[in-house]
Each structure stands twice: as structure tokens, then as C-alpha cells.
Amino acid sequence: MTKLTEHFTLEEFTKSTVASRLKIDNSVPTELMPNIKLTAAKLELVRQALGKPIIITSGYRCPALNARVGGVTTSAHTQGLAVDFHSSFGTPKEICQRLIEAGVQFDKLIQEHNQWVHIGFSPSKNRQIVLTAVKNGGKTVYLNDLV
Ligand SMILES: [Zn+2]
Image 1: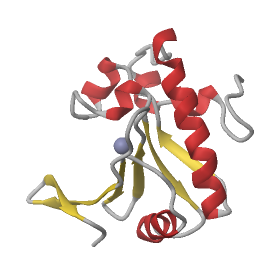
Image 2 (image 1 turned 180 degrees about the vertical axis):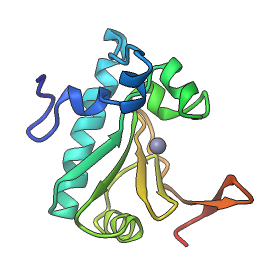
Image 3 (image 1 turned 120 degrees about the horizontal axis):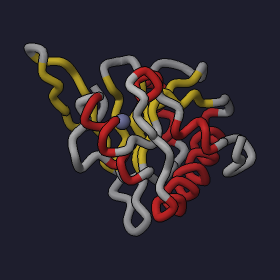
């Protein structure tokens, strides 16, 4: 285990059932390690705001893995700057509301399908964009704000 911060390890960012099944090497390239460390540091603030552990379901995605899971090529996951997570704190919507209320800085916060939360960070300027992802005719659409 490679510890990044008090509560997060590198393995939590790279672990992927899809990657292991397809034998995709999802290890983080050295040049992206600063991004991963930044994300881990920001996630400590998320954890603190929730007062509960968070469970990362998808962190870093190498381009091959990202393509397999249908992620957009510009996805912050491929830069090590975003994670999908859930927490026993509450529903994805409740988690988002709490993070906004607590003044947590993020670039993008997405309540996804009432199943998980996507949070992305920027090394330069965090835009505080809040979206809700819903399915519409089998396609994912993004609505402004929390719905
Ligand atoms: Zn995501």
C-alpha cells in the first residue's frame, strides 16, 4: 500500500474491476502523480466535511480503461483529477448538498443517477460547477444544479 494522505492510498485510485478483468495496466504515470496527490489532499477535505469515510468506486483511469468504461476522452479521471465515490453519510444528493454547504472547493461536482458522486478538481482554478446526471432515453444528460 502506498499512502498518499492520512486516509487515502494510491491503490484506492487505481483499483478497477474492469481493468483487472481486461488485464489493463491502470497504474498512474509518474507525471500524473502530482495530480493524484492533489486529489487525495482535496478528498481529505471532502471526508472532513462529511464526517464519514468515502468509498472511491473509480479514481484514476488510464486512456484504455476510460475508453472501455465509456468515459469522455477529456475526462478528469484520465488526469487523476476526479473520483467517483459514495459514503454512508447519505444519498448522493445529500452528499453534494453537504459539500456545497461546507464550502468545499471543487471544479465539478456531479450527482450521478442517484448512485454515486463525481467530484473533480483543478490544479489552477476550481469552477464550482454543480450538475445532476440522469438517463434520458438510454443517454446520460447533465442538468444544471442539483435536481
Ligand atoms: Zn466520474
